[in-house]
Amino acid sequence: MILSDKRILEEIEKGTIVIAPYDRKYLGTNSYDVHLGKHLATYKDRVLDARKHNEIEHFEIPEEGYVLHPGTLYLGVTEEYTETHAHVPFLEGKSSTGRLGIDIHATAGKGDVGFCNTWTLEISCAQPVRIYAGMPIGQLIYFVVEGEVETLYNRKGNAKYNGRTVKPVESMMWRNEF
Image (cartoon, rainbow, N blue to C red; front, side, top):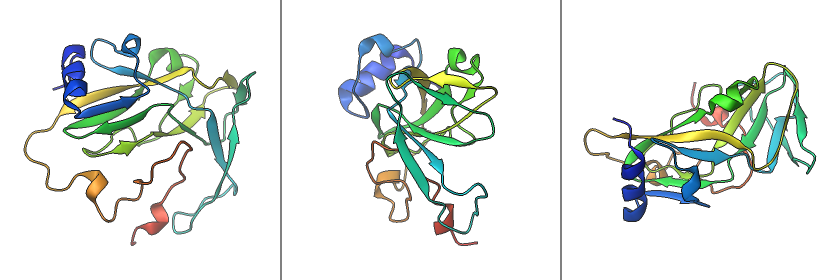
């Protein structure tokens, strides 16, 4: 089940959902709108290797915006820091974002119970498009968890994305054994 606006508000009051900054006007019927942070990143190498640490270059979106180009993967970040202690958060693009040809995640739309951080976005576009820091970029949807969670994400020793950040984080696939 997806949480309704009233349930999201109840969970915020209880502290099981944290959104900072939070503004009531961004609460939808069953979601919360998140915004694009000012930091973007791109990979230094054109060919990425799943077994190696692929380094990224960070930069800020200027006041006049930044033009995304097809064929490049951009890593972005949400302005909002979130914590989800009792539900499964999903990040989806807004329809207005999609209608500009912008995808905000390649495969990583689901968070884990216990995820406490900003969201790194895997941004690609269908045609050149100018984006701006602070623009609505996605929406968080919260699902009820059936059963007790044994280990929350923020307490897992092997969790790769626990370090609090305001900048996008590159793939840590290279830390996996394969």
